[in-house]
Image (cartoon, rainbow, N blue to C red; front, side, top):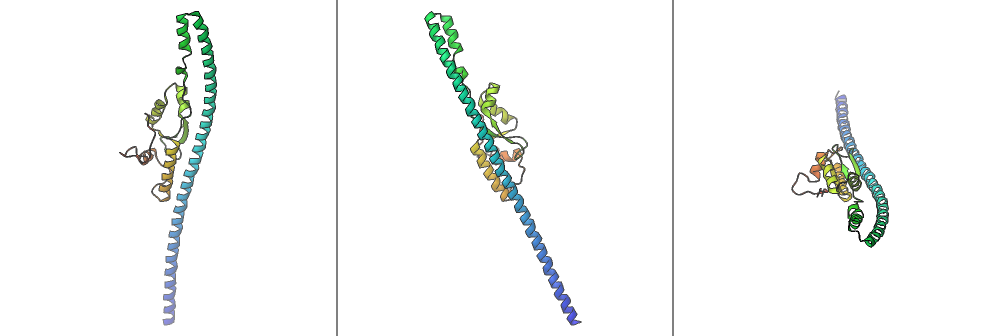
Length: 209
């Protein structure tokens, strides 16, 4: 009986150790699952950044093309204006001179080009992020760029320059990997992160002025 009792105790001890090992293994697996989830989210943030940067680059290239065409049109316009002014000057007609000057006033033909930004909408990140061409919106609406930016911000959007967005993404990646943050990130949380609700913002957000 003593022999059987000793074997039973030995089996119980082994079972206890196996149980402890199983629990430890489960804990390790759970930790690995968490780590992998965090790495997946960090990777998705890096992929999002690359996608947005590519979109901004395409917009910049398109703006360069539009700007070039505008310069050519303005050059032709100014040449035509100069010719018209020369012709009118020979007539010494003051009313005609004033009309030509008003029509060919180049100050009224200046258009904004090349301002592109990252726009984060009310749904937050990563589901509501896109590149926007502020200059194009301003031209189409006949308004100034600060007005367009102010309208977007008043509608609940956050605007970032390319550099500020890079800083934001790097911070989010660090927070995700350390377990301080999980995706998705709401618009309000982003506003807190970039310092809109703090006296000293850690990340500069483009203002409307």
